[in-house]
Length: 101
Image (tube, rainbow, N blue to C red; front, side):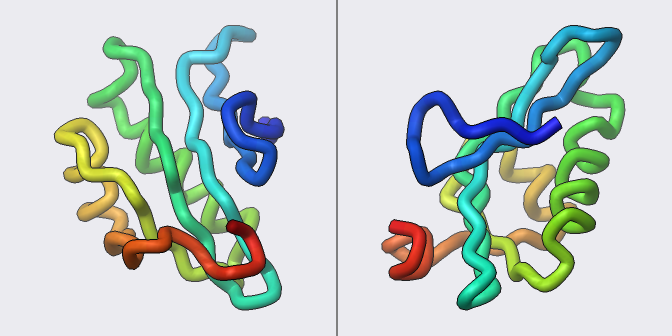
């Protein structure tokens, strides 16, 4: 389920739902003009962290935006392994293109 991000007007969220309850989200910005996207946050409740849901969520995001090259601004222990496994590199200092700043 896609939703605008409550924290930032320029970001969107992919909500992760399990039995009609939101258990996590992937917050991102995507620009179709320059085909760049930045994952800015990944939140997942503890019981669901090791069941492959994060991998499925990022795969779903890639299928929604097939022409987008994804990067990330995250460097937490929780997300580092997931993003490395999914081959999502670190973003440059600005974190996104000039169209979605």
